[in-house]
Image 1: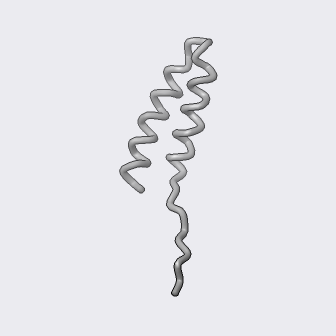
Image 2: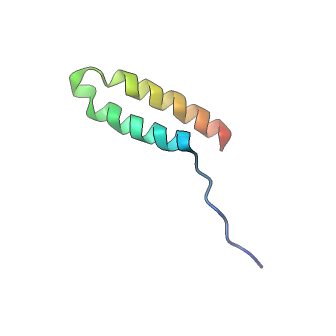
Length: 50
């Protein structure tokens, strides 16, 4: 019986995570909205693909 499962992940999901963290870190400089918005968009696309 083979019970090994490969984890499902996406490059867009990783990009969303990185951009979300970058957005939080750059929020102080008032340009954090752009990476945060891209993180939300990439996250929704990755969620629909997984």
